[in-house]
Length: 118
Picture 1 (cartoon, helix red, strand yellow):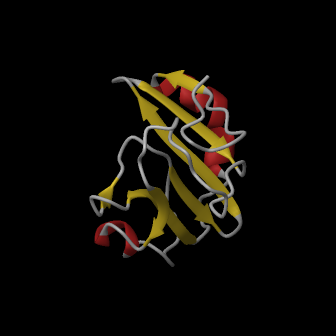
Picture 2: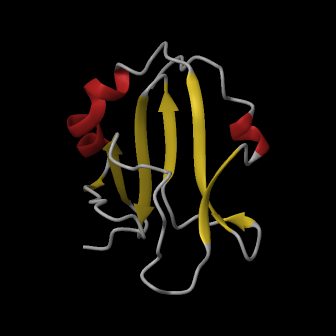
Picture 3: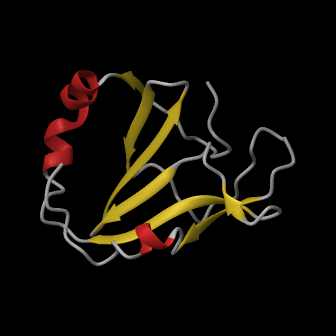
């Protein structure tokens, strides 16, 4: 299984909103009312752009949700498993990637706000 360049990471693929709701609905609902304290994207350091094939980390007051997609309709949601301080290695493909906070602007502006609904 591909680990997205994150040692020890194991995505758990789901397809369809009902599968996501069954697997994560209760835990996602528990995020309501929490503040978004950090949002990290994988950043391509050579091109200086968001590496959209990688994970997005959203931290809601200590509860980190890790989201990534593949194909058209598969999503993986994991919780508190990714340490953004660890080195990334995208399958030896030569990508220079790093976690970056504060981009894009629309996402950065959400930091500090409370999640109102899931």
